[in-house]
Image 1 (cartoon, one colour):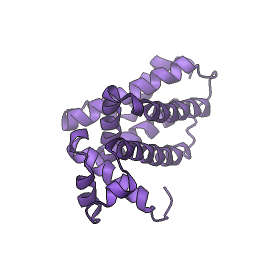
Image 2: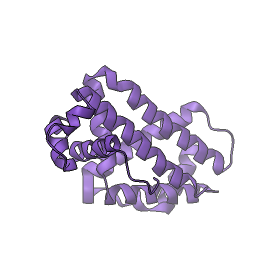
Image 3: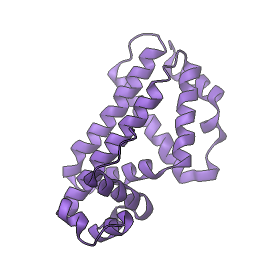
Image 4: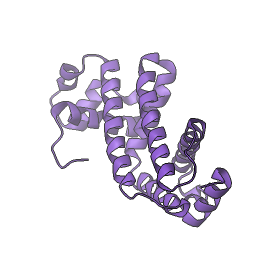
Length: 192
């Protein structure tokens, strides 16, 4: 992410992300976001009139911030399955150190189960992750990855992150072992 200060809308969306991560989707109210952002009561509803508008703003901001993170990780340009595994384990350490963005994304994903209006945003965020997977697989060589493979890897990655966050300290040590990750990539990917 750039060093620029977020706009007022972005700052409110960032506060909504924090509320989602701390209190879940049910805790996301205009009043709670006002308090988290440290702004006058009613300010959030001035910018985002409805709860759906607030959810959509948080969703768009999550996608923007996730893209910035993925871009930073992609800059490493891994050249082997081991380097890619190290990049992924580094990402997991970063998520574990500050899970706010990921938890908010999960809350928004679950909210989309009941609110179909949010599904396009969930699909867009997933597509960003699938595209990132594709770029990383291309970077390490081997045949061009199929869309089915990148979709599978995105699903596996999402599942691993859910388990990592929900298990906490009880998460398997292999989540953080780049060598074990590389062996698993070789088993799963074969030609890479």
